[in-house]
Image 1 (cartoon, rainbow, N blue to C red):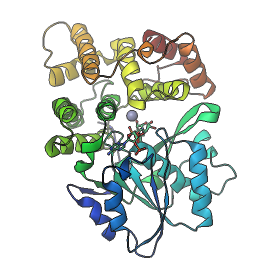
Image 2 (image 1 turned 45 degrees about the vertical axis):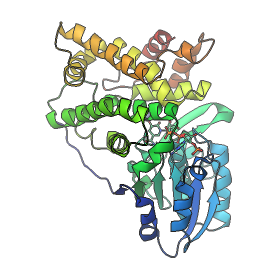
Image 3 (image 1 turned 120 degrees about the horizontal axis):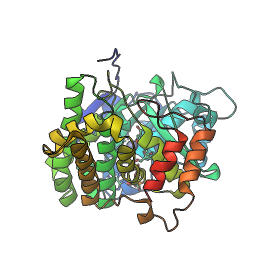
Image 4 (image 1 turned 30 degrees about the vertical axis):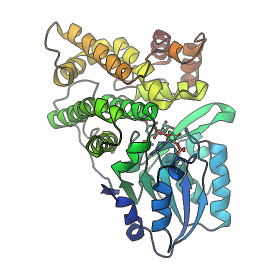
Amino acid sequence: MRNFELINPVKIHFGKDTIAKLTQELPPNANIMLLYGGGSIKENGVYEQVTEALKNFDYIEFGGIPANPEYEILMDALTIIKSEKIDFLLAVGGGSVIDGVKFLSAAALYEGEEPWDILAKAIRTDVGMPFGTVLTLPATGTEMNSGSVISRREIGQKLAMGGPGLFPKFSILDPSVVASIPKNQLANGITDAYTHVMEQYMTYPIGADLQDRFAESVMNSLVATAPKVMDNPADYTSAANFMWCCTMALNGLLQKGVPTDWAVHAIGHELTALYGIDHARTLAIIAPRHYHHFLESKKEKLAQYGERVWNITEGTLEERARMAITKTEEFFESLDIPTHLSDYIDDCEGTAEKVSETLRERGWIALGEHKTVTPEAVKVIVEGSY
Ligand code: NZQ
Ligand code: ZN
């Protein structure tokens, strides 16, 4: 096992009726901005619960943060944050709203000229404006981590940022919010969280037994919960398991002391930037091809995963590894998540070249746990996904 530090300062309130806890978590004299997305919170009762809790606080609202949070819209919020002297941000939404607020937390205190540089130049945020979250869509884990992904359609880019200053002060996780999530977004959430675990697991064995078993537990729980939550998102028990799996999948715990990959995400983000395909769906397109391409270096972990998550015990190591990939693809498809690029766009031609070239231009020439995911490999993987 490798050396590691474990820091996670996010206070979690998990459970029914926890949105009311905002009254005890928000700083009493703060000048708050409440931020949300396209309006789902006004239809499912979350907005009422939040504004009820905020009634004795000073706050203004900023709605309309879209999926794949858009830089230009966030810049409008930034102008208001500055003119209204806002000093605390409250994100109420899914990954897009929370990530948007993380960007604003960094940008509000950033002293450079151009806030886009935080993303383009990968400037780490050590101190951000304090913020809290009320999660409405389990998926990304952003509610308990310090990363964010921001899109800028004007230049076709989707880039990540982060730093120790970007952990939420608190996150409120009430699984009751899951009841109103449409099926396609539930499927996205399950697929995203599942792939987060795979990115931190499907590498090579280093004898980190507990981390492996943590990761397998999250995958086993997601596999067991997926059909239940898809069938009835109003079932509190399934919703609670789904929500906690998603948070635990990317709050920093699983990756401690082990190698990680993250190439599936890097490639997937480019497909969202090019075609606007939902984040999770890009992962389902890329992951199977990526694992086939790197079968040789990943086969031990693939086979271990196959045995412990899918009960695959027959065949050679390589056969079991291949079967594990097939099972993974079937799992995504069972959620109505198609796993080929051509299922999403009419003309795939040229995509592999574009993605590979963009990663090369950005200097990302060696992704993955062995730094072997070169632009050439990316091209083959994306081509294989057509
Ligand atoms: O905008 P509203 O009206 O709220 O509707 C949203 C949106 O249309 C809707 N929704 C959310 N909660 C709902 C609901 N509808 C009904 N009932 C509810 N309770 O769902 C739609 C999608 O929301 P979005 O926030 O975009 O989804 P998600 O949570 O999957 O976030 C995706 C974004 O997170 C990034 C992705 O790249 C993408 O931009 N990620 C962030 C990560 C991180 N910060 O750690 C890691 C991930 O790998 C990922 O990259
Ligand atoms: Zn993801």
